[in-house]
Image 1 (cartoon, rainbow, N blue to C red):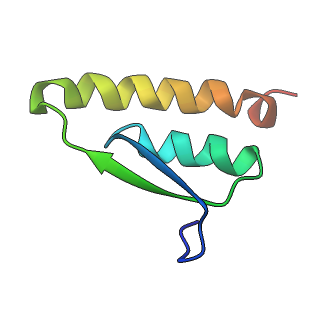
Image 2 (cartoon, rainbow, N blue to C red; image 1 turned 180 degrees about the vertical axis):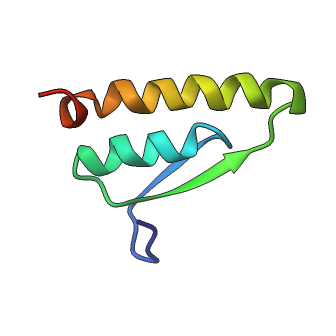
Image 3 (cartoon, rainbow, N blue to C red; image 1 turned 30 degrees about the vertical axis):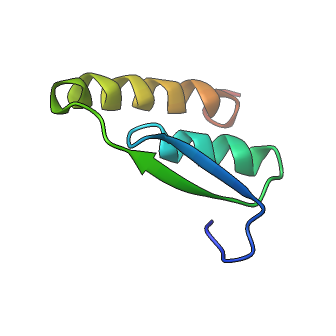
Length: 64
């Protein structure tokens, strides 16, 4: 997913990078992702929220 020739960069919190890159790939963009630091006490809640967001984003693949 990451290449040296990427024309777009996604910069977001560490727990958002994976889903942001999936959305960019789905849109046909070749990009690279960088994360920023987040407070440790947000991490567990954020990863749960991102997992639910990932399932919602990929729902058409799982539900037919």
